[in-house]
Image 1 (cartoon, rainbow, N blue to C red):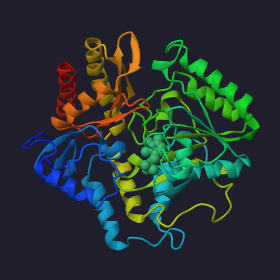
Image 2: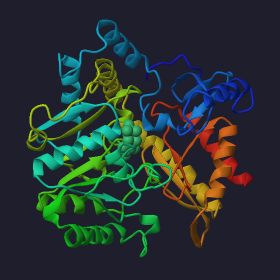
Image 3: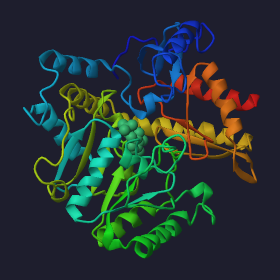
Image 4: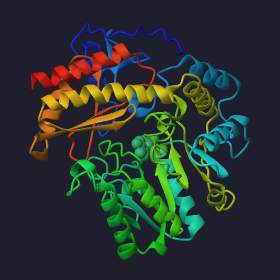
Length: 446
Ligand SMILES: *Cc1c(COP(=O)(O)O)cnc(C)c1O
């Protein structure tokens, strides 16, 4: 594993946030739009491995990875070196003006790594939302159809089209309409909250989805079914078994483009290179971003050559899409994932986390569900063993305790009652265990 010169130990020397962070937070309020939030306003000095160092000299354990971005760790020396070397040669030409090899190499890597042995093409973009928008453009152009089917609890971004695709009103959509049309939302296979229980969830939800698509939209009108193979912001919902393969089969039989939004689940995060692999699903198009480039902004749509190439020349692109430094960082990150065995490491992290958190759930009735795959793990808080009413209040207390102890922890969920954990895949077992111990303490103190 790559060395980092950031000491791999938690160290708390001030209150959290410390005085320098608090001062900067005051300065920020006068300069930065208040609509932009920060989960934990400790201002960062350096980060690496499983540690985020702040400007007050505190070292926090990182269970967030900047929202599933720094899968290979922060400032991995190989990523920094390769991106830096590129920056010193040229920063930008625009691929649509004068192309360069890095873009082609990233496309080749994506075509090789994504599920399925068929011929593929890729287009590079800047953000996850932009990738999702482009997947919809490609699906519409290739099928000549307009409707897009999405799911309850979905999150696909904050641009106008992706706000329409995203489920949750507050904070993502509230006051920002009108939204794009031809977006149809159907129920998600959410095992913990499925009326007949988790066992039948996948099969029943697939039947319901197919029924709604055929009866309410008309399969022949649907350009794309768009789904996160594990929902991210929606609360790390792992769909009931069989749901994804049945949907994918239905799409194939009806000429609908099956789009997997792997922006959060991609690049080794779930213990596979892509989360679709857990159920052997081969999407027609796959969107990626977050974990792709070790922290530099890059995103992509990858998919079947016949669909991707259906778009007219000049129909796809953007000024910065596939920026050369971001491409260099992506190539170094992908090499790091492969040479450091981070797919296997993610799986091992998941096993370690799930076993401790399941034991914790046995002791605390307010932990309704512990779920996830690989290093993408969540706990859903409820009122008690017989009452699944969301418990946002307990969540607030647990998370605020963890933050004060120096554990960077994120939340999620339509009902704001899910704690989500996304440690960098290079975190050591000692830091992982220490982070879990802090979470255990937080529950013991409730
Ligand atoms: C974060 C995310 C997006 C949006 O990505 P941005 O880079 O923030 O635009 C889209 N889809 C999923 C599943 C995500 O987690």
